[in-house]
Length: 610
Image (cartoon, rainbow, N blue to C red; front, side, top):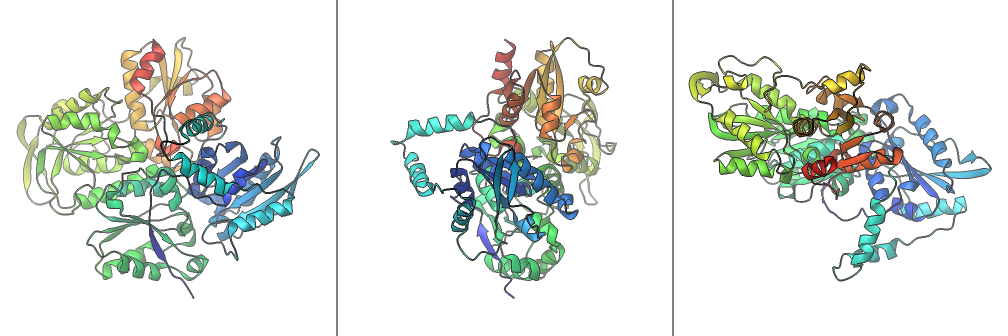
């Protein structure tokens, strides 16, 4: 049996996705593409539709793993088809079925939908590397159009030539700007699915000197290449993805994968791996894989990810695993060292967002290190202070506090605003006078550390389990009284409402900034959690979040006032409630790493209130 596996490099690019079968569907007026699958499948297609200005021809739903386990995916597909048939201009529907539909042996139960006086034809195109095909999928799709009685409009080659032409600076610049304006003005009546957990893990691993491998049938890496990966964020471009067929699924690919990994990587870098939805569904044996690689002298780790969850839980777990390995046998405390935890470009928008703080720290002779950077596992110096920049670093931050008594500063600057204050607070934690109190460095030696009593922590008395120290001087979870009043239905304030909706650490920083300078408003902090694992991480920062479990719940609860949020969320809410005012802050786990609008948050807030 042929269970051959291949490994390909992840090629992160700002180019459009390849001209594939989905592109041909979006070229046809009146044809709606219905997509179901795991997060990566639907997210990639959503962005492909968006960038072509064809969101009106797209309907998709990212299904949770339990939906497949219970055999409920057929019910969901049936409902989405009925919804797509309601559109006035719908002439036909193509169900773009994923690897998961192939794997679970889903079979369509209808070839048409009766909508009023129309009989709308429905056809299914199985896609992905697991699908057995006897010919070109685009030719197969053209055959489906013929069966539906729809003349095929195929301008893909012309579009490709036009796209290449527009990339020449001297040609097509105004046309390109006009097209981009049209795309940016599309109605966003549906949000993209959240970035899948493996995108976040691969993003984190891109900052470590390792060979990072995404184990999937092959199609999943396109979500990283065209949506979630940050250009220039890859360590020597050492990110890879596997590719295999349906035979590998039925026959097992672990042995073949051991051989190909061992044969491909000739350097001494560790091999860090993570999985996808198909791998979880088939019961891929990651423990066996790591065991066999170790037997061949390969340093390797597997980071759990399911492909059905958003980034926070898997990234938090990955950072915990890396942190414990990195500091398993630490050296002495380096008094000018600041360790950044929680950083991924998907969570923060990129290292450039943190640079104003880092520049200030370096001017004060502080050294800044991202977790996992300068990879080694022996005698890494312990930091004087931890700077946690997103909720996804919370587990490793707590562990380092409990294990080594290291204080933590939690917060994000708003461009250059708060940068000096945040840097000063980090420096203050690192420069407390030495009182000779001690803590263990992981060996039998005890070394002196600083007295941090002013920051509510003393090294001689280990912090209570779960205690976090923020640069605003608060301990434990953040309280949001406005949220509590609303949840208890006691909100009767005459103040105007401002909703803050983003990554939790940035949300907390925005809440503090706005309450400090613009007290005349009432601020409510909400967290969008379209997958269940997000709450398990975000809930560790506050008990008072207003959780929005779906885009429908978001539109129902946030129906007026001003919203500080990601560009796509603002556009979605304005589509439902046109009077809503918006201030943009980036959150790439929603809008991807190709988002063009990031705004100047401080200036936007000031202009809004003036």
